[in-house]
Structure formats: structure tokens, C-alpha cells
Amino acid sequence: MIRRVIVKKNERGILFKEGDFIRFLGPDTYHFFDPFKRITVETYDTSSPEFQHSLLDFWLKHHPDLINSHLTPVELTDQQVALVYQHQHLVSILPPNTRIAYWKGTVDVQVELFDISTNFQINPEKAKLLVHTQNPKLKKLVNQFVYYQKVPEHQVGLLYLNGQHVGILSPGLHAYWNFNHELKTTIWDTRLQEIEMTGQEILTKDKVTLRVNCTLFCQIQDIVRAISVLPDINDHLYKEMQFGLRAAIGTRTLDELLENKTLIDEQVFAYLREKTADMSILIKSVGVKDLILPGEMRTILNRVVEAEKSAQANVIRRREETAATRSLLNTAKVMEGNPVALRLKELETLEKVTEKIDKISVFSGLEGLMKDLINIR
Image (cartoon, rainbow, N blue to C red; front, side, top):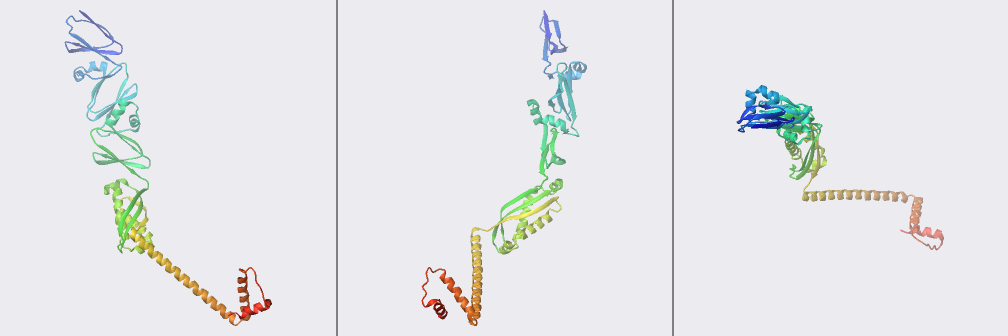
């Protein structure tokens, strides 16, 4: 006949009679006359403060004072977001159009509201708390509701809102509420950039195919200006390098290119400087690293070089032989009118001969030997 209900200190109860809401019950012991079992009591542990019920909308509309005495209600519009703190620790994110309530008492709950109708950026301190959280539940909500981008040092980010560029991001962490719009970020390096072109085949003026390896160094001075003019900066620079190389190589013969390769660098550099003058791209330098000939042409060229060197060697050899003959003729003219010089030459020759002889037998004395040497013709 008498029903006894205990609501503990960490609990709250909701009293229903024949399924109709009567009132909230605080911690206490209750006795109800219920011979026909028409009374039911729902109890909730307030250590888990989040409360959702099918009658919450009804209570908020018809019993707001009653709700506020036991619960902290939260109603968000389609342009509001909320952060939920428990005992001053961030624990959850509430998306727009959320309607929820939290039990008062056991857990101290604070709700921080944000209007995202005009400003959807999250301040840096809140962004660090959200992005670097170790709470698995909160981390899952961050990945779902927060768009964030880390811009490395020496780089800048371009932020796009619904496909339209809206800002430049400096190095650091940037976070935004990811509701009611589409966000995208592209990262650009502000340092000196290197673009490599390898294996580019180009015909010279005399119809010789060259394979060219070239390197371009450039720096983007105003990224917003550059992307407003070019859809793909690197692709555009690569193609302009191709056009510049074809203009520099296609108008010269192979011999001209081999004699002075710096002409290519200078012409391509000037060409690229002119083409990128109004695009906020600074061309630092252009360099051709390799000019590679096809296998057959390389063999022919090696033969030509070998023949040229051989001809040069023959010319030098003939020049030396002529000089030596002229020297001998001058010596002979000197000795023809000077017996003493002739005698000295004979002694010099004798000295060279005796250097390679172990023994010498002399007949008629040294004087006879010298006289016989003089008579040799």
C-alpha cells in the first residue's frame, strides 16, 4: 500500500503518476500511497551530469523555473557553439542546434558559448587545448567539429572559405569551427625554391638533338598576387623554362653552344625575368647543368675532336723538326769558317761516344786518334 523510494545524495529523481510528470525529487526518502502501482520514479546519478530526456523540450517550455532549480539547460541556435567544462576541465563540444541539460550538484559544470555567425576562428589558447587534448572523447569531437592547420616556420598558409580566399595564415597553429561552411588551406614556402628540369630534348639550329638538364632558383614575393594570376605556379615556371630553353638552343648551332654554354643561362634568365615581372615571382638564377649528346653524335664528335688534336700534334711536331733543322744548319755554318769550333764539336761527340764504351784501345797515340777523327767524313 505504501511505497518507499530513496533518492541518494548523488542522485536526482523524477516522479511520474500514470506516466504523467509530477515533479523532480531531491536527495531524501519518500513514501507514497500507491495501492494500484500508478507511481513511478526515475533516478539519475548526478556524477554523470549530462541529462537528456524525451520531455526536456516540454519542461523547458512549460516549467523553466523548475528546470533551472535542478538542471543547467543549454539551448544553441544554428549560429552558436559551446564548450563544456567540468570542474574547470574542458570535456566536450556542443554543435549548433543542440538542446541539452546538466544536473546541478555533484559536478560543477560550466558552458562557454561562441557566436559563429561572423567569427568562426578559435583563439590560440582554446585551439591548443582542443587540438592537443588527451581526452579520447574530446579528441574525437575535435576531429569532427574543428578545422585546424599547423603552418610550419618560413611558410605561409592561404585560407579559403567556401572556395574564396579570405586570409593569410602566419606560422603557427590556426583553428576554426567547422560548421555551416567549407574550409580549406594551402601551404606555401616563402624561402628560395628550386625547380629541376631533367632530360629535356631540344633540337639545335643544325638539327642535333640535345638532352638538357637545367635548374631554376626563384622566390615568391607576394603569394596572393601570384596565385591570383597563376593557377599552378610551379607548373607555369616549368613550362616557361621549356620555352626559354627552346628559344636559346634552337637558334644556335651545336658548335656555338659548346663554345659558350653561359649564353643559354643568360638568355633563359632574361626570358624568365621578363615573363614573371608582373607575377610577384623573383627569378634568382638559371643554370644549365648538362648538355647531353645522343650516343652516335657523341661518337662522331669524339672522332672530330681526336682528329683535330692529332692534326694539331702533327703541326707542332713539324714545327719542332723545322726549328731543329734550322738550328743544325746555323751550327754547320759557324763550324765551316771556324776550325776551333769544329774541333770542340768533335771533342763533344767523342765524349758522348766514350760514355757508352767500357774499354778503348788507342794506336799511334792520342794525337793520331784525334787526327784520324778529324779526317772522318
